[in-house]
Image 1: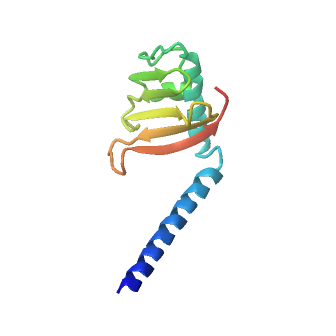
Image 2 (image 1 turned 45 degrees about the vertical axis):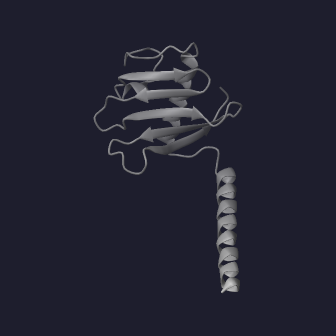
Image 3 (image 1 turned 90 degrees about the vertical axis):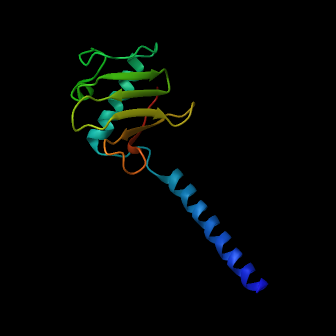
Length: 136
């Protein structure tokens, strides 16, 4: 009985370690850029807007000249800016997600990830849309 428990414990721990190793390898071998061409352009437009709002000002006017056209097309109702780190856009278009946000992976990283919060809110909220690499 004890031997059987020991074997089960070894198998469970081995599977857990293998799973963790696979996740680590997957995380660090993914391409630095992914998503469709439109999604990468959208992410770059968010980064361009973050740079334009480096003083922390937010954009509440959908016709603001700091917004690239690809973002204006979503008729944004507002935004939030954390300089050098994050840009959040609240689209007003009826079929758009509730929000998009572009975050830097870490303080010193050149890797940026674009997330969306879907309207139906199924699937845990934030969904990764695109990943880009760019200097701030």
